[in-house]
Image (cartoon, rainbow, N blue to C red; front, top):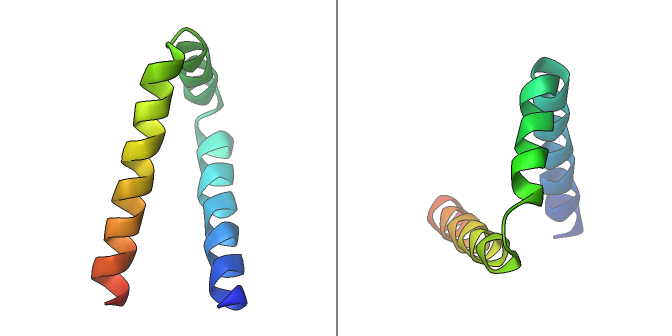
Length: 62
């Protein structure tokens, strides 16, 4: 289980790193857009991302 969590975190870092390396200006614009969003909007986006991630793991891992 620890290996799977470590692998998942490593993949997150790889994907995020690729995005910053390939699209630095777009990532900067995205961060600026996030800063002006209300906390409730960011919270709901986070809840949606968690639900989507759990659903994907559930479907993929059974």
